[in-house]
Amino acid sequence: MKRFIDLVAETAERVNEIFPWDLEEILQQREVMLLDIREPYEFEAMHIAGSINVPRGILETACEYDYEETVPELVEARDKEIIVICRSGNRSVFACDVMQQMGYQNVTSLKTGLRGWADYEQPMVKSDGETVDEDEADEFFTPKLRPEQLSVNYKK
Image (cartoon, rainbow, N blue to C red):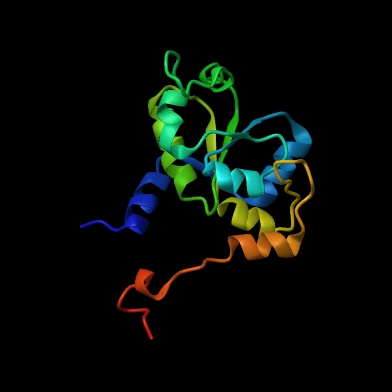
């Protein structure tokens, strides 16, 4: 049986990953598509300015014409540089893998995700454009696990 972390590690071997400081440098040098695949409520709370939001659950249909979820800008970006972003860098690895299978030539996952971006003290905005406070970002990205969500090895 494979665990989630095993699947992430295996998939990560097939995709390119960059760290937040690499993305900061890229954004200073050239224009790229920032694809945030978190859920809409996560995106509305905070995201990197200029990102587009396509939740992971509809990614495949958003990448193709003839679906209600179609995002033309994304369908037509198969040759563009795309940085895929999620909370921790796990969902984005899976998304990059699928996108590569769908013909996207230049997709990269943001390793450590927006948690790492926040830890690196990079700017984010709310859905209304207001800048996110660093403490607010820290609180948002702090895991909030209930006792029943912890494995037997971690319960007190």
